[in-house]
Image 1: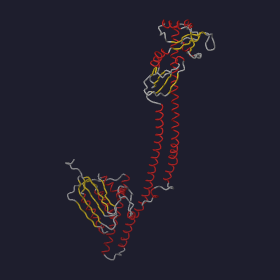
Image 2: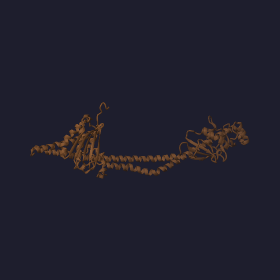
Image 3: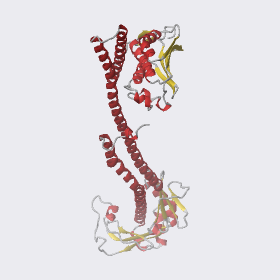
Image 4: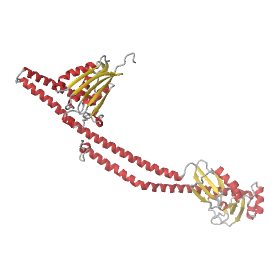
Amino acid sequence: MTDPKREVSAPEDGKGRIISIFVGAVLLPSLALSYVSIDFVPELARGRQALWQKQADRTLYYVEKDLAERAQEQALEAARAVGSERLLDGRPQVIVPALKDAGLEWDMFKTLRVEGSSPGRNMPPRSATKPGETPREVLSAMEAPPPSLWEDTVPWVDTHGTVSGILRYRYSPQFVERKLLPRYFEHDFPKDQGLVVRVSDPMDRILYETAPTPDDKFEVKRAIASPSFRGLKLALRYRDRTIERDTRLWEMGTLAIIAFIDLMLAAGLYLVYNNVRREVHLARLKSDFVANVSHELKTPLALIRLFAETLELGRVPSEEKAQQYYRVINKESHRLTQLINNILDFSRIEAGRKEYRFAPTDVARVVREVIESYRFQIEQQGFELKVDVEDDLPHVPADEEALGQAIINLVNNAIKYSRESKTIDIEVRRDGSKVLVSVKDTGIGIPRSEQKKIFEKFFRGEDSLVHETKGSGLGLALVRHILEAHGGSVEVESTPGKGSTFTLALPVAKTGRES
């Protein structure tokens, strides 16, 4: 089994400290902030809702103020049409005919009169009009007297521009409903602010509404204080949104952003952990690779040196023994060459400098040559070799040397990872548009969980025989790279304890007729 301590970086490892720093300095503070935000964000949302409610109420206040100013301007215009003398009289039987004579509606006002006043602190004793100054500008520059309980008031400026009294007025409810409100909302109320305003009487009867509101849900309501509009109520809502919904969306959006940031940090930690773990594991595999390759190089070199010295010193008892020593030297040199070729090819692949020379290749011939060169070694170790090559196989575009190396690696693995049952079956056949080369053994087999990993560089299985057998962990990685470079693939079928079958699939070159 895998040692858990070997799968993760130790605390004293530098890369392990990187993870600890990342967790301590970034992720934990972020999670703590998120935990606090769970309570803080709703509270902040309620504060924002209160602020938006206050802004809506302020908007309604300015609507009321603007409505009152428009009513005041119209009252001043009507008063000027009536004239100062009739206003000083103030009786309805005098004011009504004056309104009719001026072409105005006679039922505009319940009261319209001027109260004379001596000059005081609030009304200048002489003309307050300057060149280019309008009566409204004059009025805005003065401190208006407080309204009475039943009437609105405004300083009265006569035709000579002199403040001579206080104009008191109160509109009739019929005129307010019929003329004043529609005129204001249709001509003076801004249409592009996305606001809906409703005016209703004390009995909640709708007098005017800028847009229909079926659900009667308004953001703010306000009672009008002006005597001419006393008892009327203003209500305001936004046309396409509500403060409650906007607050909820803001709260959900803020929490979603916090959760997204935490998720990204957690994902970053996961990626950092995986990368560090993989790098540590890869570094360990490279260390094992160096140790294994050193052993693999050392063993054939020691044998070659031993038998070469024995032959050189003439200590061979017979010619038959000398031939045996020669065969050992030849076998070990082949083994050493294969190992060095694997390492060199792997180095070229890692550096991106591996090049293949493709040419029409007879796969059957390549397989026979590889088998003949290794037949002695295979049979010497007690293996039964079976080779089945289909006739009339088409040529495939391939690098002959690389293809032979891939087959050699599969045969070597079949030799190294077999126990008592020692059989190797090699089959070459055509399957549609591909030529298949299968190498089957009766060795230890490969668990399903490792059947994809075995093609990774430096990977070695968990079986005890694998660890007892020295190897570089590069053979199958090179096989996969060679086959992918040829536009083919390598597949494995294996059952632990019953052996494995590796199949190389090489695409057949298209002829002119097929293309």
